[in-house]
Structures are given as structure tokens and as C-alpha cells.
Image (cartoon, rainbow, N blue to C red; front, side, top):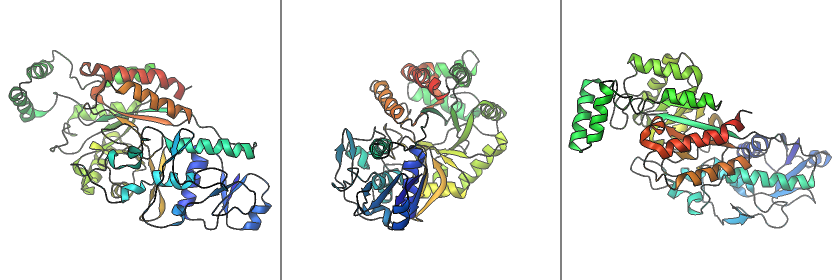
Length: 431
């Protein structure tokens, strides 16, 4: 048990220390504001104060964990060995940076509460973030800081028992559209043919025709291939189905078609299934509620997992909506068109609501890459494998978002990447 002495125990402080020390490093902790309790404690202990009491292990505290609401935060990004860090502490501190305040800044998405320039869908973009501007977006800094802290505290207290986590690879499959051509109804099918002609996409016109006549498989219908692959590598994938009403940005087939219901049930029998919340539900919680109910009825199981289509994530509004609807896990924390760790971490964490100053029960599962089809795939495999190695070093969770189209013949580089990631990392996850 590590005892932390501090002048005041705030919700922010409790949340951050619990996450960094217990969830990432596996060290049980307790807090005290009484000097005599701290002095009498003969096991592992540290103070988190402006001035150390004596020669104890101490981290000089930044003000962030003792404040409320949002204020101006000053930054000086420096390198701790090779890892960027901020909130330097000075020489009386046992570690050179206040990693707890810095971790809170990253995990709470503090910067997303500040005014920012939205993109055309109203989203926060990577370019706005501290990590992007200071070139550490592809580094899981929070986890690396935690491990550096562990190295230093072990020098002082060699008996510290930290429970090691196991690296996990988590493939997430987005299913915004289950089939490219099948089961779309007469009007949508005719509209598709017309669009192919107007846009001079003759190969697509022929492919559409062949699929509808049963002469070839639908390019998006790769579910059997996914099952076979995951059986081979003994790994699980997480599937997110979009079942909202047809709209400009939501194009799936109707949830009332038997073939679609059977597909979802079949997938839910061998995999974890969640809701891909429709684009339209982003601004209308009523729609989100209806979609959740539809999926619950389809799979006859409670629906706890959700991710937002187009990564339409705004903090804290969307997360508050999820909590109201009793979702317990979110998979939207990442960027749609940029690789990297949006919250600076490769570990699932609980959403901290700064407006309410509480840790919520919503577990955020961050991802670090998403297939959208419009990212240059040549630059990809190396960068992704590099990120996976970083995550492995800190025994984190490497979560990557794909699309059901990724295993089609249209996307050979992506298919190769998907299989290579399974080959490289699945066996590690399931020893």
C-alpha cells in the first residue's frame, strides 16, 4: 500500500492517482491529510505538496489538481529522457515533472473544454491539440510517465509491489453499412445504378449488377472471413453496428430486414457487439435512445458499448448523454483521420466530468488509428507497428478501428495490415 500525503484530497487528485498508480501500475494506494499518520506509516509513502516535509519521496504539486472548473494553463513542453512532458517540478521534487497534473490534463480532455475551431462536422481536430502541436500524438505519454515514475520510486522503495498488466490487442470493426449492394430496396438500388453511370464508375456498375444477380459476393460481406481469421488467431474483435434511420450520413440497410437481424445475432453469438451511434443521433439524444433499444431487442442482451459514427465526439456533452442512457463503455476516443492517442494514453480510463468535478462510471476505451479509406496507406504499416511496439512496452491496450470493407479485395494493403496485426499481437493477448 502506497500512502499519499497531501494538504487536500480533491476528486481530481483521487481520480488521477488511482488511474496512474493503481490502474496503470497496479499499486494500491491510500491518502492522508494528517502529518502524524504519514510519519507513522512505515511502508511505501510519498508526499504531493509544494514543499516536502523532510527528505521523504515527494512530488512537487502543480495547482491543477486543486482547482475547479477550467482556467488558463501555462505550458512549457520539455523532454524527460526522450519523452515529452510538462509541469516541471524543480530540484526538491523526487521526479522532474508533476506527471499527475499532466496526466489529468490529458485524460480529462481539459483542452476540449476550451474554445477551439471545429471542423465541418463540428468536431475537435487533432491539429488543435497540445500533443499534435508538440509532436507527441503517437506516443502514449501518460503510460510512459507512469512507468518512469515506477522506476524512480523502486530505487527508493525496492519492495514496491506493482501488479503487471498484460498487453492487449483490440480490433474494433465499424459496420456503418453491412452490404455494399445487397438488400437495399428497389429505390436505393436504382439510385445506385444511376449514380454509377453519372460518375462514370462503370466497374462499380458491373460489380453491383454481378452481386445482385448472385454471380459474386458483396464486397462488404466479409463477416465469415472475419470469423475464420479470429478463430485462427484465437482472438476476439469488437463489432459496432449502425442501425439508425437512413439519412445523409447514415446509409445502412433497415434493421427491420431479417437478413440484417440474423447477421447481428450471428455476430453477437461469438463476439462483443456494440452500437455505432448514427450521425443524426449526435445532436438528438432521443434517436440515440431508440437505436440502443433496437440493438438490445435484436441481440436480447444489454447494450453497454457504443461508439460515435464519424467520431462525432464532443466533451462533455456526448459522454453525459451516454451516461444518461446507461452505456458503460465508449470507443470514440481517437481521431478519425489522424493516427495517435487523443487522450495521451493506451489504457482504458474513466471519464472525469470537469463541469461536475466527478469521476463518472463511463469507461473510455481509446483507439489510436481508424481505417477511413482516405488515409494514405503507404505511410501506414510502419507507423502503426511503431505505435503497437510503444504500447507493448507499457503493457497497454492497442486498439485499432477498422471497417467491414477492410477484408475485401478492394483494400489489399489494409487487408494485409489487419492480418499482420492479428498475427503479431493476438497470441500475446491470449496466452
